[in-house]
Image (cartoon, rainbow, N blue to C red):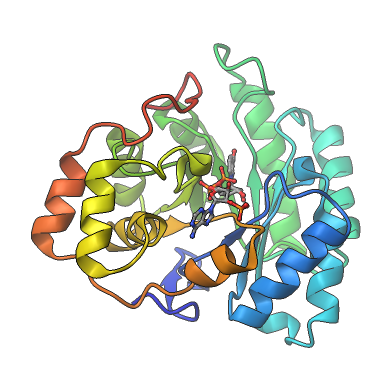
Length: 282
Ligand SMILES: NC(=O)c1ccc[n+]([C@@H]2O[C@H](COP(=O)([O-])OP(=O)(O)OC[C@H]3O[C@@H](n4cnc5c(N)ncnc54)[C@H](OP(=O)(O)O)[C@@H]3O)[C@@H](O)[C@H]2O)c1
């Protein structure tokens, strides 16, 4: 476990490389293109983007130019959170497919159960309308698997009980001390793979002394411990990096945290206490 080609298995039976390369906040154009090319050259075979990141076209171009066969790369993208009607979801999904221009998307997620800024409201009907469109994409083969992101138990139950297909993935904020046990447990019980977004708390975890002590004992970086932590909890981390040294370091995860270290890390309070959490998580 720990190599970029090791995989988790989705409920669909598809294999998903166990570390994904995150691309949120990487500017479109050369910065995204170069980061994704570096990631693919380093050996990452799983790239996470979103319609809302504005960089799908650069991700797609980097993949096409990489020389790595399309079928060896797992690409995730996301339907915009605001798309809560059938027509808008169709339009946005078609845009994602065209932007990426890779023939198909391996995993397409509803980015959030609420349009950004409306966390306190429920959008059960809108999520079902969006889910129906993702199911259609699955049916015609242009989406190979479908899932959700930022969904709490209520939102998951809505889709599980009223949709025809169960989500394969729930992508949530997850890092040491912020492991969302209620949502994670529900997903485990329903064969929904949990993906850890912001596994480094968007960088806010990097000065945590307790985690650093464990990193020192293994002569690895704090970031590497934070990513191993996800893997050893059965959760798929999505580290984002622009710096080539970071991109390479996050791929070097061939070490093992002991059971005692994992227990200590699992008991730590929020390792990035100032970090932003949305209202339905936690
Ligand atoms: N579904 C959602 O709603 C959602 C929300 C947030 C994120 N995500 C996904 O999750 C991915 C990761 O989350 P995130 O973007 O919040 O960031 P993150 O991976 O938690 O942290 C990224 C930050 O850590 C730095 N870093 C990376 N590797 C490092 C290393 N080895 N040593 C030191 N610093 C390191 C990066 O620096 P440099 O960039 O300068 O190298 C960057 O500042 C996103 O890119 C996106 O794909 C999804």
